[in-house]
Amino acid sequence: MPKEELGGMFGNVALLDIASMHPSSIENMKMFGPYTDRFSEIKQARIAIKHGDFDKARGMLDGALAKSLEPGEDPKALASALKIVINSVYGLTSAKFPNKFNDVNNGANDRNKDNKVAKRGALFMISLKHKVQEMGYTVVHIKTDSIKIADADEDIIAFVNDYGKQYGYTFEHEATYDKLCIVNKSTYIAHSIWGDHAGEWTATGLQFQVPYVFKSLFSHEPIALSDLCETKSATSALYLDFNEGLPEDEHRYSFVGKVSSFCPVKPGTGGGLLMRQSGEDTYAAATGTKGYRWKEASIIRDEGLEDQIDRSYYDNLCNEAIETISQYGDFDWFVGDDRYISPNPKSNELIEKELT
Image 1: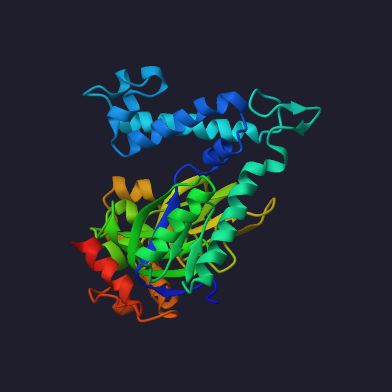
Image 2 (image 1 turned 135 degrees about the vertical axis):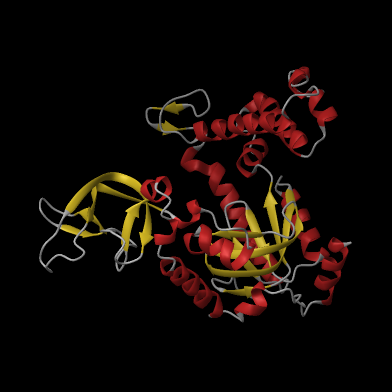
C-alpha cells in the first residue's frame, strides 16, 4: 500500500480542501442543540458568498445579509467577517474560560470535552488517508482539513467527495499542481495548472518563500529592493560591530534595537557584523548572518546604496534551494516547461479536461 510521502517530486497533484471543517463538525454533532441550525445557516451563507451565489445568501438569515450584498458593497469582506464569526465560535467552544459556547463548569468543558470537535476532524482525515492509500494512490501531503493526492483522476476525487459527505464534510477541489516538490510536512514548492491561481507557483516553508529565491527560481518577477532586505530580531538586543580594519580583538559596537531590517553588503563598504547580545558583555552572530557584513536597510534605501548589496548572500540561498529540490529529481525539468506525464492514463485525461 502506498505511503504518505515525506519528501519527493510528484505530478498531477490534486489539492482537496474541506470547506469549514470544524464548523461542519459542530453541525453534525449538534453541539448547540436547537441553535445549531442557526449556526449552520451562518456557515452556509458564508460559503454561498464565497462561491458568488449572492441570491441564495440574500435569502438566508432572515435577509440580514441582503443590504451588505447590494451593488457597490464588498462581498469578499462580508465573507471574511462571517468566517471570523464562525471560527471565533469554534474557538470559544474549546476555550478554558467559561462562556456561552462551551458550558465550562468547575473547569470542565462539558460541551466540547477534550476538544472532540478537532478530534473528530483529525480522525476523519486519518481514515481518509488510509482509504485513499488502499485504493493505490499516493498521499503526498495531509493537513488538518486538506489532502494532496498524486496522479489524481476523477475517480479518486469523486471518492473523496463521497467519503466526506458520509461524515458531513464538503470537499472543494482547490487546485491541481502539475509539479510539486515536497521536502517535509511544512515545506514544499508547487506549480498550479488548474484553479484560481493556475499558472502560478506557490511555496510553503521559509526556504522557498524567501522573496529573492522565489522570484529568481520560480515566478521570475522583477527583484525589488525590499527583496534584498532581511528582518532580524533578538530578545535581548541587536548590534552592528563596525570592526572592519580594526585589530582582531577590537570591536566597535553600535546599538540597533531589538528588531530591524538589514541588507548584506560587500566587504569594504562600511558594513558591520550583525550581532545579538548573548550576555552582559558578550555577543554572538545573529541567526543567519554569519560570514557577511550588514547595513540597516533604511540607510541603503535613503542614500541610494543598492550597488553595495552583496547578492552572493541571496545567490547562496538560491543554490541551497536548488540542491534541496535536486535531491528528489531534476531541477531544470521541475522549473521548465516540459509537461509531467502520469503513469495513470486517467490522471492525464483529467489534466487535459482541466486545460480545455
